[in-house]
Amino acid sequence: MPHAVVRWFDPDRGFGFLAPDDGGEDLFVHASEIVVAAGGPKILREGQAVEFEAGEGDRGPQALRVRVTGEAAQDSALGLLGTVVWYEPSKGYGFVAPDSGVAQIFVHSSAIVTGGVVTEGQRVAFLVGEGERGPQAEHLLPLGSDVARPAAGDGADGTVSWYDEGKGFGFVTPDTGGDDVFVHARSLGDGLTWLSEGDRVAYEVVQGDRGPQARDVHLVQGAAGASG
Image (tube, rainbow, N blue to C red; front, side):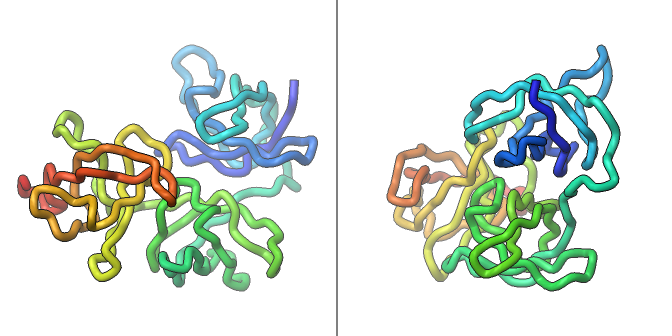
């Protein structure tokens, strides 16, 4: 059975990444795949040694039936915490300042685990890898988002995570999880001309040039809590 070390794990969102001992690509792990004693918490800690079975999930290669075999090793490569100092959505990249005080790290949109974008001042967890221009962030997870969590049973399909009225597009975080969905102003219905971060919306998903895209978007509840 393969072995790995926990790179990082977010207990609130219930997922993280493992670094396989064989040097292969990091593997996504969901809390539902953590094997524990009856009633035990399904969480992992950075640096723990684990064994797992390799499988395939919605995000590609994934660790299944993960069992902790040892506590953190001193030389394990752990995730870092930091703050986004600059990010340009239209260009798809920016920079993160690690809490350790080392130089700022380049981050590309493709490294953002949740898809979509990050914002200046946002707290993030990430790994560091080597890119063409030097160190860059990998498997970057936004933390402490100000976007409201989905309200169960309100008839919406997702929450607006970011929207630029001037550019006429943004992203919606689906209630079902997965990557953020691109939304263009042309897809807004019911006389909508723009959206705000935190808006609860209903929509259909179609495949566009940028991947999954929202169509026929309707406002269910505004970010301030007033019904739309």
